[in-house]
Image (tube, rainbow, N blue to C red; front, side, top):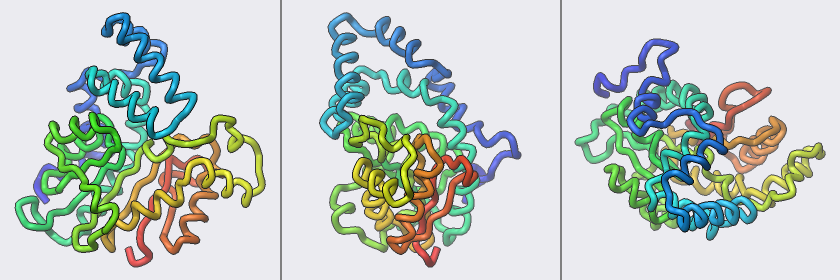
Length: 280
């Protein structure tokens, strides 16, 4: 590891992500404020298209509506405007992730970026690549990879200099090329069928598990992505689930699949989960 991988003093763990935010003039904004800025930046036809695409995605959060919305956002160069709504959430997640990522990469066998097999990190649903850019500032001797289902986002990641995960790696994982760290940050839950918000209502534990998997398929997705983890690697999963019981149910389902799973942050109000192979 180079000197750039050394963690800053406690209380300054957000400095590299804040630097990235500052580079793109990302500041905290409400959705109403973002809408106003969109109206100022777009011509009337594009602004109406933005509103319709967002409405379709919110009302029917499927792969097709997600692709249409985000491809439009990235074509118009509005990705940093959208990120403003999640400013504080992203900082909170970052403060929890950075020490854990540092430990993973530090505990991995000593490898350099110019050697055939450097330490590797994959961001699933990479979006504007904010975390990847911040991590690149923090860790130099790491191979960073990006994955997203949206064409314009993949193009954005490639233009930023990040390697793209090839589709065949998902179909036929190669254990010799697996990742030391995988991030699934607010990405796996964007496509769902929970429009009636039934999961917010009290349910018995087994019913909660059934509903959670029917509507989000988190367990299936996370088990699939965990196939790309190295033996000592860890997958970090964060979603804005509104009840701690949902994280508890998901944690139990993942453990039932033979994977290790623990809470990220506090059990009473977790930000997410950390998943690994039993030998990790």
